[in-house]
Length: 361
Ligand SMILES: C[S@@+](CC[C@H](N)C(=O)[O-])C[C@H]1O[C@@H](n2cnc3c(N)ncnc32)[C@H](O)[C@@H]1O
Image (cartoon, rainbow, N blue to C red; front, top):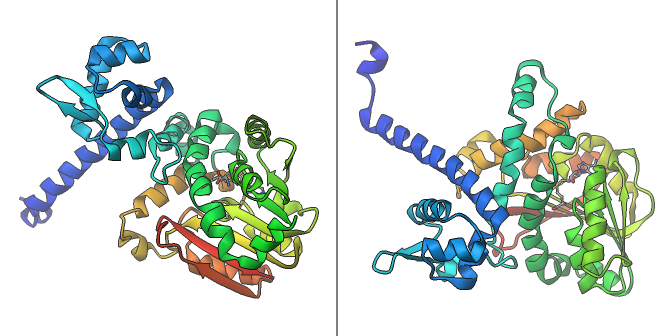
């Protein structure tokens, strides 16, 4: 027996083995979640349940054998409830809150929508591990964008106008009085669509370097009936930001920026006197040990998102590759070098997922 085997703690090995199987279960369920989301299976169950597999097949217009296997997987995994006496499936209020109610702060059914592109890009990613570089943003298509948009939308409908902007009373007052807001890295535009509803007088502009995101943002704004209220433009913040704004926002963008040391000074220059730079990041740290000890165990999620998208899209264009786990101290350092004199951390107990800052010129 080798020394390594002699010193093996079999209980720990078993624990790790079960964790590996559990994690592969999560990956398999991820594929089923994407299919379920594409076909509206949770919505069909919520609307018509409790349902047998026959009932779901009829309501959702799918094959019964697949409905049965999908429901069985979801029941074993705790995503749907099962009543053995009637052989029916349903959603508890909590399951519906997280899987069906799109306005709930815990609506997370869409997060799996980013997975197909991650798996499609694995050859390119492996190449990047070997030779450097990355996976360009163009390799993340509409399903990725839509999955992310429905994830971040819950922040905007739940917190933007009730918590976040009111935490900066001077900015809130300016927007009410017709002030200006630029959302940098606006993605599919949902933050500004929400702002248009809450601040009917405000002048709103969205910038993003990814042209398909700007097209989606324009379409979303038109569909929401606020297409004439928001201007969306393709723009790389690192190349300069036209205009001057009372509020500039970055929701989950700074750590994605290929060149944050060029972009943040442009933000500083584009703030109107007394204006604020509002930054939302994930509640992760720049320190590995803190992420290993993360209270919700989100460290691996952060680094996983980073390698699959955030760091890797920046490295694809020769950028810094800051990564998802930027955390507070590196952000403060970036803000200071960009010329911001004051960075205030805003803590919202109802949203422990995010780190939020207000920076003043
Ligand atoms: C993770 S997405 C977040 C999108 C949106 N803020 C949301 O919360 O749904 C990050 C976005 O930042 C954009 N972005 C990254 N660096 C940028 C830069 N230098 N200038 C403009 N947009 C940038 C990306 O194109 C992408 O759409």
